[in-house]
Image 1 (spheres, rainbow over the protein chains, first blue to last red):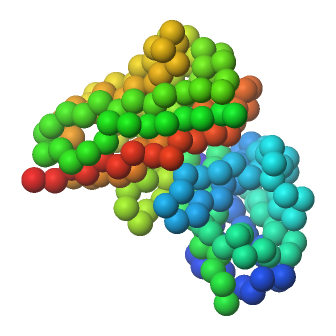
Image 2 (tube, rainbow over the protein chains, first blue to last red):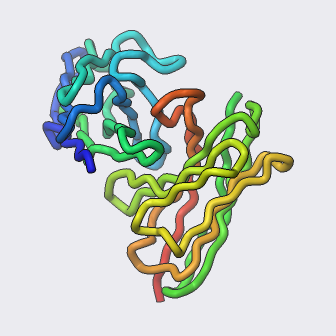
Length: 108
Length: 119
């Protein structure tokens, strides 16, 4: 089973700063990696699919990159509404999805 | 607008049963594969089960296999999860989530329904 490891566990930044979140897979997942945002009390929301494609309605400040085992979610300039928990997800053993443990992006 | 609305959660004793429902609207339900994903309090996301668009192909996580049954009624635009032999570790918010068409991600999620297994 492929394990996804996200780092850091918590990231403390200020609005306007750039955020860089990492997701590392224990084996290659090609480009089949997605990112989700979850705010307290809300369902996850798809941000990025296939490593680098923004989902419908997602602002351009969100971008994804990577392939194989190393992936990055970048938020170019943090808005107040971006502080949330972010999860990566892969599905190499389709249709079973596995998620990383999450990165909490908090206001510094 | 795509909408997924779960219902049926609640408090149940260990060993009990519960049936969750997910009402879909805003898209052609019968064309999409669907999933259940759960989240224990304060924890991360765990995929639970998948069903193909026709209902003919089904998968479960090892943690629920033999106890949970996923099903769908395309005429009613509804997804279900029958949960039997519930355990304390099944306590979680349960989300229904739509498979993206031809993709490897879950593009729309319901708001979730809380299942609490406790005596």
